[in-house]
Image 1: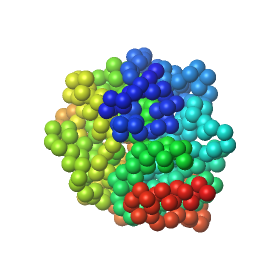
Image 2: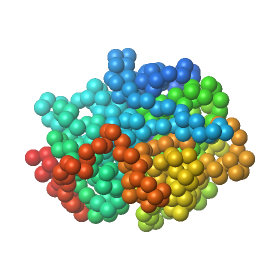
Image 3: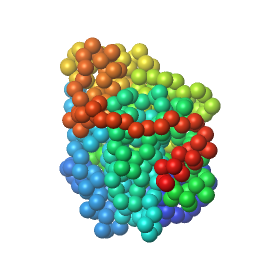
Length: 422
């Protein structure tokens, strides 16, 4: 199967798309055509993923696909046909784990670095991506990770997940918001000399290798619902997760509906309304910090997928949720049923209550994107109680951190890449 850029260049093979991350014309890769697949039986994500991704990968990939997706993703009932799709059970307690593990395996199997060179995986994070990618690539032969994060824009526990590893993981605290980090990744991938010198690629959701595995748990949720048609509520920042859901629906021919739940950074909601997304707007800091994205890269993919599918476009909507509503929902859930939810999942739960208030029927599935224990300060402030620490994150506070501050410009990044690769 070949891949084309959203801006027209291509075709390229999957290994080339994985390595390039960003297409040479600045667009994002999508499959030339999406295969039609049957809904598989309900079962573990590893089994569903192997069935879904078999259309994109060589036959001998089944083993490493199953290994990458060997994480439980249960559909948790909330009552009255409301559900949480729990995606928090990976090694860094966030949904990014499965995609990062898949990409690490895919690069090693399909696009290894030549000779004794190392490929540099450059990643921008607004919180969870950095930890997931660092954990997935940490210690792998022929690969190193450079994480760009907003120095003041992630929780301490999130930061420690990628600043305490060492062994091929370099963390750089950028003087600016996530959008500045994402811009630097795109600028670096567009600099041919820099790409060749460091064998640069990206592990952000601009890379098609992150999106393909994320489609699998939407398929699994549909199988778990035994063919009933749900509304998926997806807490959304850079829109990669929502894009993966649209890919799943297209492949299955499903009539599922999708709601992108956003915070005060509402470029997607403006696009849904037919307004200018206003890519020049300043990023607003919110409790749901991993969704603080003013210029969502994957909006380009969403537009491409829906441009030729009026039915899919009609089934796509947005909900804005402000900071006060987010914190109140966290408090309400803890007060009513003792459940801790992180501020991103809380945005989705507010959207769920609105949908029911407007008379939406049938199953509604909110994607739970991260464990509440990754955001102890925010959760405690909202609920008055401290959430338990996920077992996979225990002991982070006792480890020493290593990270360096960096100006938000390409020359500074170039210098840090050269020093890290020396």
